[in-house]
Image 1: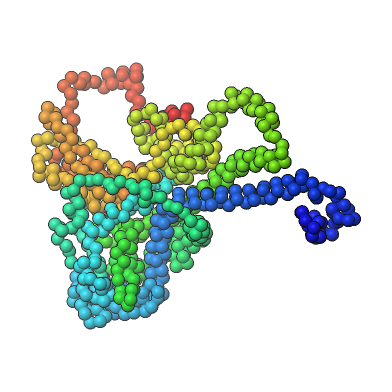
Image 2: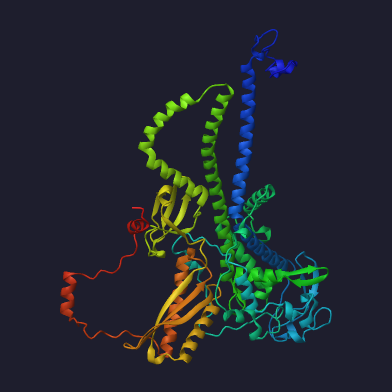
Length: 634
């Protein structure tokens, strides 16, 4: 304290301990320059630490928002859709509503339903075949029902199947960013798809039925004849300047996700995966009770009820929400949603939620460690400045310390450089996150080792990364400085997987008609597997050898998931290979390699002798030792 007031003259005024007072004078200490510098130093240190903490909090907060904002937006959209579907199920069950979609028009009575705010209203759900003959609420035909009436005609507003596919392509990458944890976890993703090579048909619900548009005018059909290319990424569009309000909203969203009911109380508890699965089954049964189809699947038009909004007294269809619903739940070719598919969709959202929370939590831990490292440097510089305030020259001390530091530099120079490189890898680059499947190899390795040598990221800190070998579940801890010099392929952040097939046929059996038939059947199969494949990229002849009557076709199919779910993609790949082989057998075009004329036919005795001398050894599966060698970590 410095001044003439009694409080300023007494440092411990409130404790009634008299210090620097008339009873206990301190001489002229309060008027010395040292005392003034001490006060200035204390004021400077407090202000500097306050500014530093505010700047660090804003920097790490904005960094976290920019890094996870896109994932958070996509996750919240899907969580909102699940919440709305659960609310629809609760409302249907609460009002005991039964919606009919059978051929028996006598069952199509006026039922009590509600909008998304719980307001009761009367309407009739027409059947699939007789929708044009059933009157709506206002007495008009169902084709012009006011429930689905918008500003333009229904034909102009209702999305056809092809338009929905085009909108899904334009909407960007798939939001199913699943982070697979075990190599075999893809088995539980398998569902019963429609079997056989049937043509893909557009089977739509009566409520959502629109007049089919001409194929020649469909945008997706026109796009099929155009060159295939992807729009470039504009970095100006990706620049996000997070504000303090964005940081507060992000933290509020994270607090909402940490609740036991992340999908609202309508969905039920989802504190762990078992609770989420049980709640999913309850929601599915409520939706199933609201239908009279007598099957084990929900018609997708019932799910689309959440896309109906009321605006200025008119009921309109939110087309963008319809596309998001289809991308999330992926109905089959019958436009229905079985229990397993519904549970997979909800479980996928919950999986992304769990990994997102873990990633943000781990990022916060890393930020605290980085802040402590920065605090060390900050306090060192601040100490030098305080010495300058007290007019103490710190340079002689620094010179004496530098002599000792030079000797340490020769001893710990390589380790220090690796340490700094590892810190920069995690602090700035962030090439992977928790749960990501990564492929690590040397930059000089031109050939990609393949998915058999991939790793799962188990834990990340500033100094080391714990990874688990996908093939054997063996765990290894690697220095971040070592990883900074290697090539890291992140399967989770990559685009949708492209799977290639090499098919061999008999040259004399493959005509243009047979080729077109084979391609159309493969295309129909791809469209049937709506939850697996996105599109057939190409099917073309790659090689012809007239000497051995061989023609080789190359086929490439785009999957809906990334190589993060490698085991699931391989199962779907085997499914297509099996159907291609069966189709080729039916058409009689499968190629069988001839036995070379110079091949030596071994007798049983010679085979046994050869096995005794040099046993045949099959190719061994990848091991941790071979994977470390491929990754350059051994």
